[in-house]
View 1 (cartoon, rainbow, N blue to C red):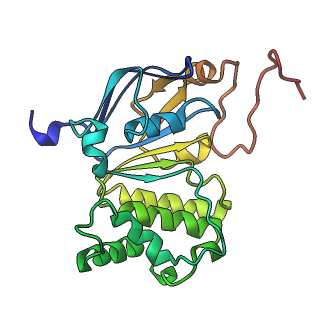
View 2 (tube, one colour):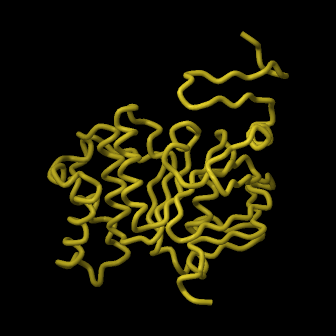
Length: 258
């Protein structure tokens, strides 16, 4: 097979369990190079677990994952990761530029950063739009600014694939728009998988959508059917069009109708 034909990520019959409890069941997914996949689903549905398994941080019960044709452990340097939460001590004396340079830790040769490492970190700051913040203390930044810094740190690894776990969960709506625009720009040169619980926001920007609640339901388009969502949330729903600021759920067990 030509290298250009190798998927960015290929998952087959994947099962992950913790303490005997099944978290991911029979996951099958192919993500092609240049794809931009949004994964939505309820809290506790396994979204973060799936990303960590792709990163090679979790060993599955059974099944396989290939990252650009190799195991996650052998190809982890090809993946940049922006975690769901990144807590910083606001008084800890570390600057933005230093945080982004940490993305070169696994790439540097020797005990100190090279001139090339510093140049790559500088370029990452620029791509994420935070070069003007590089001398600021990380604890002084807003939530949105910190998320961009974390993207810059991930970009400093020079990844082919970027994984993001709920990157806009703690930022204001105004920032979300510019952040998603940044990801669309980055998608021109890398594959992106974005995990979120916000169906309406994500569906405006990604190329494909998947629903995950222990099992994965993937669409080859941006269409999420009523059946897919009902299967994911285990309750009846009514889907609504963009622009209507509410969602209607028919009465069902455990929910009080208003």
